[in-house]
Image (cartoon, rainbow, N blue to C red):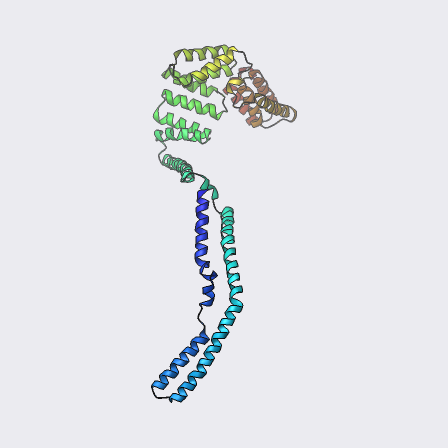
Length: 366
């Protein structure tokens, strides 16, 4: 708010500095009159001619008297004109000054509000610049790393740095490929494998696929204390319809974790949920708070595909959704129904078979 007060005061001062002299009476009355000045110069010239002897004293006095009469008439007309029109002109100038003083700032603010950036004034100095710089720096950094990796694709460290940035940007498929390159060029250690498995889970909408499980199991073989691998394998057991196995895995994680481990609260919630028999494993993997709404959307997709058929991608989405919700029997049934609907589509059948193998829906095989 203070910045607006300062700007208005500066505008008012600038306008007054220009208009104040024009609003004074002296500005009207003090202006030079060319007629009176002419007659004054004429009298001075007569005196000089008399001094040089070009005019007789009598002639000089007669000429000066005539010039003086004309000067008096001109001065009188000047005064009467000033009295007649000086005050109205003064009022008009004062009115123009007031109008300019009020209208100009309003017009300036309106134009600034329409075409400027007034929101910047409501933020701390430099906040917008820092926010834009952060976006620019991230985008620029990613572009630079990508350009470097295009020239030197064997730089495993560059791929490992780029992969989590891709995840942050929501580019999960690219993160998966970046971790694959990092594993290829840097080797398969426990932390790198666990991160790769996590990227696979994120890219598959929270589903711990067979490929992701293999990565977590390999990470666990290299480092039995890998908390990330153990947590995702416990989730995988729950998604596979084995709640008791999942609960045992969670308890094992809890018993071997230090008291200040950041994941203890999460693990305790999973154990309590399974012990409470709250229903399906969907609660462990659901992303939003409204499970009924999610289930409703899945059921709507299933009804439409059953009645009208659909593309391989839509059948894949349905099967994967059932699997994520922990409804493996429905996922297997949807896979069988997809095979029937796509019997004439070889590529579509291959897609469904690959998905069933990935989700370990062995009972859905033909």
